Image (cartoon, rainbow, N blue to C red; front, side, top):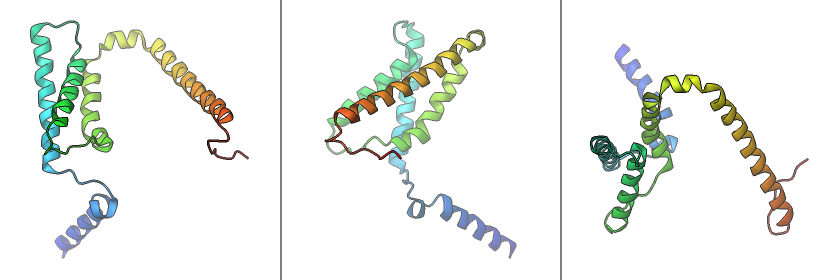
Length: 154
């Protein structure tokens, strides 16, 4: 009886949070995950080559970007392959290793030494970008008012 209750509980949580038919979350097929693992492996090999050959003008992240560009170009010329970019898959599968590697590779003493300027630039840059975007949207909606519908402000 306890096992049945436990299994029913796990099954209800699965249907509530993980089942693609009820949550609308895309199911990641084996083929898609294989492509992701392959790309990550090729990126690792390119990064190792950059380090081994002592290429100073190309950062390791730049090598990974080139892998993505060449992979895209190759896949464009293969008519039987239909693999579209999925932003949700990128955020769930690709971004965590990128952030983790950046955290591991950062020069921690230099970061601690420059934490105040980094925070100042981050805050001021975010506020300036927000103000600039708001200004452009405001002036653009005034200039194009009759062509663009806006959200009424009360």
